[in-house]
Image 1: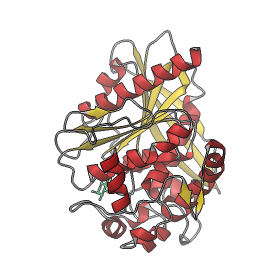
Image 2: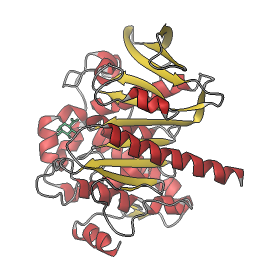
Image 3: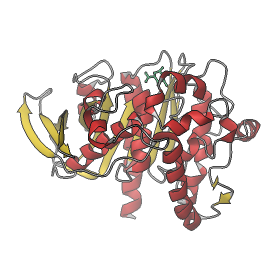
Length: 368
Ligand code: GCU
């Protein structure tokens, strides 16, 4: 661990307990400071999520994907300022005598299963899935007049106003609202997952909606789970992401291009907002762009907040895992798969195994 702390110091990564020269020394102080951290992260990076709307819901049954499960198409109809937007989602639940855990999954496509979504295998592990194609919420571009963005954005975006990631995260929270109305679902076991830009989104959803009890963020990289300061060669930097995808973020985020040292926070502050719930971060060996070391360091730097809650953060006495290994015995974890940038069955297995252990441990503690 000492080597890791040295690397964090070399990169001048600020303590996760500190922002704007204020430091939280204990849990009570953290609970106050975290609100300031959340406000700052949103103001500078993603934007505040829109106010909650109560959509009209329509449910249509579909043929089950596997035996002993259900599949329903759940349609959300949002209305605001005399504008309407409809988002189709897919709900798949395994039959069970007990209430089931469910993963809200933001995907690049609407297909179930999909190359990123081995739905049969996930259901067979006892997890339900609630899936949305992210561009059905609002498009992945600089147009803020369509979809959910069109319902809320008034005129030109101001520097602190939300980018597209905040809208996708908002959709995940509205899906959670609906899941909590379903009696088959255990409301204390609803999590959120995503890959790449949607891994970033899953982290924002979990950081802003405390009802999510776990998050799995795969290959989320820059402006996701990777520390921005002192990036490794070949890793995506703020200058890249702000040039190619400015609309994912606030306009404020541009101010830190090539000035990462001036950031009042780093990505471990985002991760720490999820404490004491579970956060599992996935990387792939050939995904240099997402910078695995920076993602792993983020887990290490955020972990002390879990300890303030009396929980374990990442447990990794021997440093970073090698390919095929996971460090997921704590409430924060990192796993590394051999291969390219992708959301594979192996990633899902690492993540769900970690979540299952987390939920089991939590139950044991509650029973004591
Ligand atoms: C680009 C982008 C990444 C992002 C990825 C994706 O590569 O630079 O930050 O994670 O797209 O979402 O597929």
